Image 1: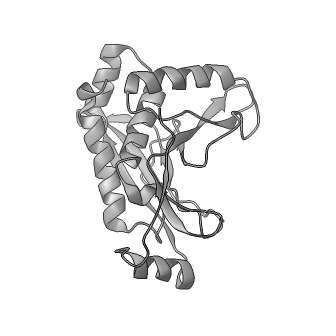
Image 2 (image 1 turned 90 degrees about the vertical axis):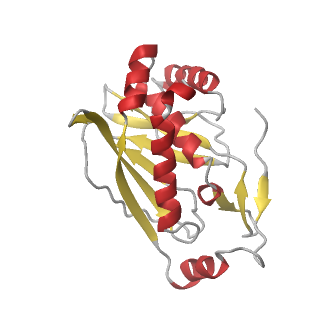
Image 3 (image 1 turned 120 degrees about the vertical axis):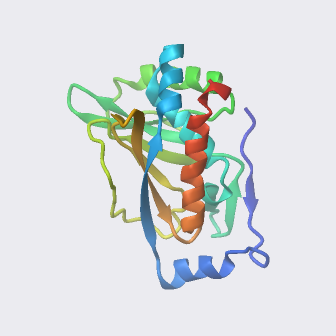
Length: 219
C-alpha cells in the first residue's frame, strides 16, 4: 500500500472558501447527523462467508470516507488546509473484564481481503492491551470509528472540545436490529462545518449505504 500524499487546497479557487472562513473565524460549528443504514445485504453476505461483522463494517465505513475529499481534510503545521489521498480507520476494542476500551488502528487497503486479515491480526494482538491508545505509531491521516453494540439508538450527539482545526469526522454506530424484514443499524457522523455541509454529510451516508448494499461485489 502506497503512502498517502497530502494535497494543499488552492484557497483562491476553493469553492467553499467563504464557508470555510465563516465557520473557522466567525461561527465555529460542529454538527451530528444520524441515519439508519440498511444492512440486509451485508449481513447476508457476512453469514455466507462466515466472517466477522465489526472489521467488515469498519471497512465499508472507511471506504465511504475515502470516496469523499471533504472528510479527508486537515491542516499542516503552518495552518494550510489540504486533504489526504486516503485515511486509515482508528477504531475501538472493548475489554470484557473491566468494561474499558482501547483505541487501535489498521492500515487501509482497498482490497477487502487484505484489510480484513490485517484488522483481525490487530484486534487479536492488542485485545489484552489496556489504556486509551493500545496500538502505537498511529498515522496522521486517520478517521476515528467506534461501535456501541449494546443499544440501537435513534440519535447521537457529542460535545467534543477540540481545537478548531480538527476536521476529520468522528463515526459512531449502534446495535443492529431486524425491522420489517430488514436489518438496520444507526450510524452517526460528527462533522466540522468548516469543511462539510449537509450535502456532503448526506452524500457520505448514502455512499456507505451503497457500499453495504453491494457487498457481493467486494466480499
